[in-house]
Amino acid sequence: MGALKSNFLHGTTTLGFKFSGGVLIAVDSRATMGSYIGSNTVKKVIEINPYLLGTMAGGAADCAYWERNLAWQCRMYELRNGERYPWLQHQSFSEK
Image (cartoon, rainbow, N blue to C red; front, side):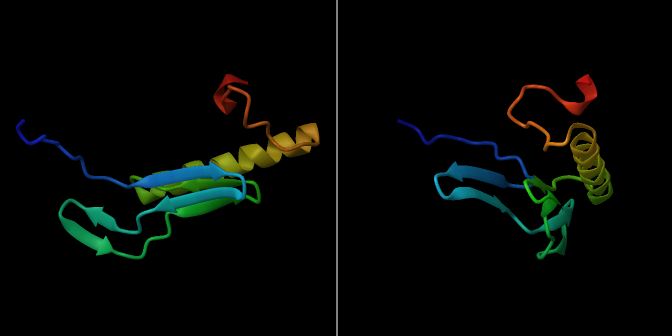
């Protein structure tokens, strides 16, 4: 049998695992622009609130905007409803 050929795409690697002891989130820490490596120490896991983490991939400015937006929407939901946002329901903020 011949060797398998794979066409790997480049990008951020983000992994998340849920287990009995909690949650484990892992991401790479490299920031690139084409073949240029800008940094090997980028913080790509961001705390949205004490119960929610975000991971960053793509343009840093876009990621920062959406993570701030999500944190704001979570906080507004908490203030309006007196509880954390129910993440297990299948609905996005844009559907409200």
